[in-house]
Image 1 (cartoon, rainbow, N blue to C red):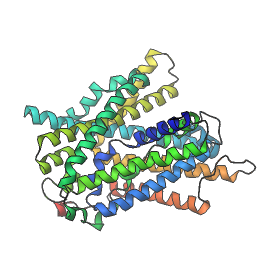
Image 2 (image 1 turned 30 degrees about the vertical axis):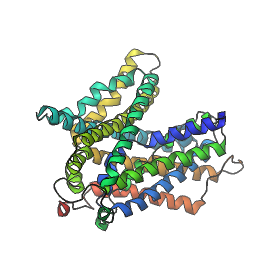
Image 3 (image 1 turned 90 degrees about the horizontal axis):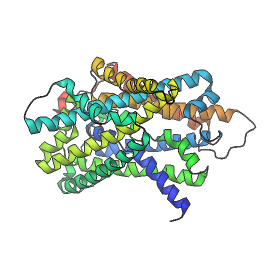
Image 4 (image 1 turned 120 degrees about the horizontal axis):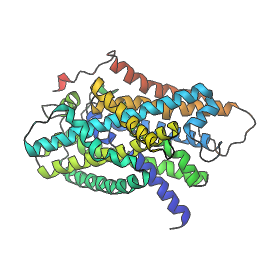
Length: 409
């Protein structure tokens, strides 16, 4: 394999690895109430929109020198206000995701510990395992986190493969034909979150030395791999688990139950239950390490910590204290926090890149290295789509639209 092909493979895996994370655990619960076939349509639509905005970001990045960030591009294209909105949205997105991982991992680890010890643990305990075991790695930097993450990724893919192989023979075709249109709008935010890799595009442009053809290949194949894995995952899970009943997807959605618990009752196998818990932990921890490291570095840069030990400690506490307070004050569950993150992803990786490109294209006299597909009408329609995702989350949490799952339990 030549150097160029090796870099394309590396870039493709970087995008795929960034996309695949803990949202895969919430997707079957969020999408299963609508049904498998409709969910595939939503997934493909969200994938296409997110891939398109990735090409828009590529167009924008190529108009700046290497090392340009979202903030610097927003400042150049949208002014100080645009840069401020981008900065705040990034920060809220990071905090929402870290909070989601803390809450989600706690449910799974407590479920496993209670199964072993037969002791009911206090509710507040659920945010502690991830903080105690993995948060300290963040302080010591990316090199340690990178090596740890590689082993966790291997574990995630191995457990994913075994679970899929185990569940495929158990699929009941009638469950794949289930549809309930009243839940068709429920899953957009979580699905959009599942295709979020755009923050690494500036790094990818530098890594591939601004080779547009190679970068486009990485963007397409790197985002298509998660799409394929998600479809297979949905096929296996939604074809195996019931929607109705005390251990169905509807009950899990209402009570914010982990997917591993549903599989335990559906398959009646301690082995697959342990695998599902392991996969869930791998998926959450790999996501947690990447996002928390990014947030820690983001705050260190903002505080100009440098080598100052006290400022690094301050950045560390600012990385984890707000997410903990977010959980304690609002008592939000794993799925609800991912919904909030989905709205922020729609803004930061959907609307803001469109506005940046719209502004940059309006400035005459500069030849483009690459122009993404889509005229002003397409850009306007893109804003409408991502605004629609944001409004779904806002209206749902304001109680203006509701999804009655009691009828399914």
